[in-house]
Image (tube, rainbow, N blue to C red; front, side, top):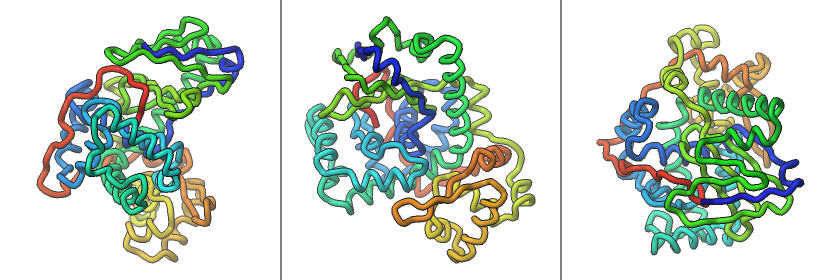
Length: 355
């Protein structure tokens, strides 16, 4: 059992976020990719994704091994609206923070896997890992991200309604069957994992819903367990899953509305390709042409544009995501002859490390 102890100050600082972003959900999806849990909702997705993976994706199994804990890349990448922002945070992570995560991993697994060797000191190794995660995202999560994000936004809105109707007590009491609120302590069923106590020290707690995590997870900094995040599974039924995997009518309707290239630019931005240069490379057109298309999408209220550390980043608006929800999901294509490096059972209980 894990216990999170609240003071009055902590209760006043409970916050709810819909997601940490596409990077975190992409990493969490590796848990769901393993095994056969909730087959009616994830079975088809698993088969498609496993068919698109090859031996180059072995690093994913190193990041999220069959037995917890994982290498907590999601914590190091932090909250980001897109993959580029989270990747930048991960690349900038202090060496001591990365080393602490890797030491924690090695302490429980007995060694550091070859795929993660050098990740503390070498930016090239970090970039190589990020490149693999990016490729996996675009195969497994990116085609569905707009609908997944909309589902998580709806989950947060529902939690807000519970908070307004029933207060913090009602919010903490309704998160998940494995989470029990016995004031002033939140009890999280940890299965066979060791007991752990977390004292928040007045910082409050961030609650984050997840589409792919189907068990609660406490994520925290090894040197400062008071600064923790509780992930809980978003409510998900078969009807929700069907809508996310299948989408709506043909992409042709969206292309007819916006033009084929502009529709592809909007889709790419929703998938996490956010800089002008990256969009130009993906679309195989000039940066000047991308700028023209993004200007039209921005004027139509389908995207927003902002500067971040010298880069210009484009993000879909809710209107843009809603529009994308009306077209179907691109089919996965195999990268090379398929293997199934992640086809083992998922963890069945919570663990005080994430990612």
